[in-house]
Amino acid sequence: MTWNFSLDEEDRKFNRYEVQLKYNEGRYTAIYIISRQVCVNNETEEKNTLFAMKTSIRPYSVNISLRMKRELRMLNELKKYKCPYCPTVLDSGRVADLPFIVSTQSAVYTS
Image 1 (cartoon, rainbow, N blue to C red):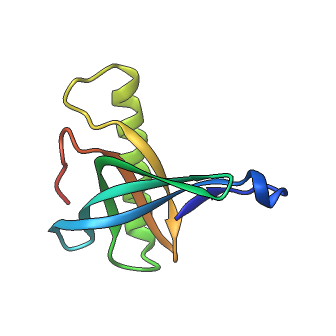
Image 2 (tube, rainbow, N blue to C red):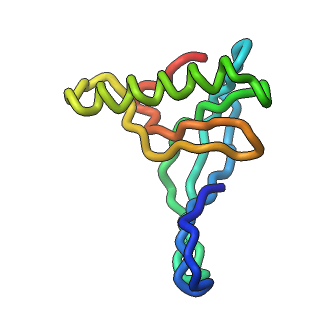
């Protein structure tokens, strides 16, 4: 779960992701098909669109953290040049010390 920290509890907005399917797993990462819920002003709205989420399956791995940062930079660079086959990055971060990248699933990438 990621959120926008706000001092006002009533004004908080965050996204919550629900795993629908485990698509693939490799040695260091796993790819899931997820759905997104958006919560604004304590009201949750379910989005019916599916996304892809790539996450590390090895906690505290410095190597995978560097790889995920490099992949995120590469995806953002490809987006800047309007690459038609590149998934669009929607969100990224860390939860429980595991990095994740949420993107469109137009081109689900392998781990």
